Image 1: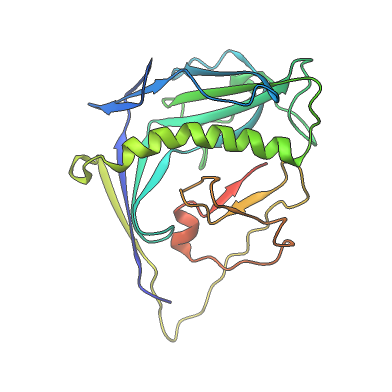
Image 2 (image 1 turned 135 degrees about the horizontal axis):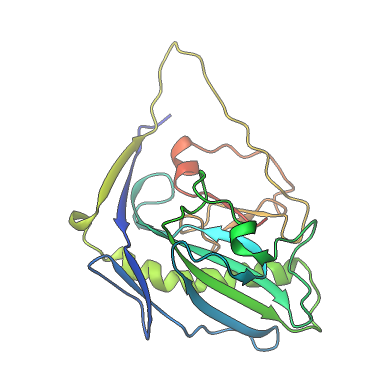
Length: 245
């Protein structure tokens, strides 16, 4: 296994505010409220900020919680990645009739009751949430294409943030972590098996997108006929799998 180095530089966000364009300055992230969307599919798409410990609010079903990271140098699993800490993206969705965007169970309700905090892979109680809520027209069928269009819409919005993150000086990072793919001849070989969803609709995974936990240029596990895929530890760590369930 090649000894590629993955360097992750974390920039902590203390405050998230609304503005006209994306800006990151002095640990403050400013995000725009405007988002371009297909008005033939979506009735409305709103951008709101949920502050830390203010989770006693109603939300539509939770479609995703997305970390905000971007590749600066190299491909997924190697090179340099910039990531924001202190903030995540929350994606929710329903149609104008109140029918939730889900398959085998929905999670609409009071956010504090529906979202488990302070766990691996989930926000902490002190994190900001960029809440993207989509309301779909009631004449649009809930199908795989619709589910993908919602994830793609949110990813395009996040890309505006990623483009600003790419030009942040690495010297200003609050934390720097380095990870290596190493081989140990003569030692036991260990493989971790992760079973992912690939049934259809939102039960899909995008593999190897351009950006960490992104959508663009990702390959659907369904389109791969759910064939096994080998990832290095660093590819997995760097967001090579984007779950859509």
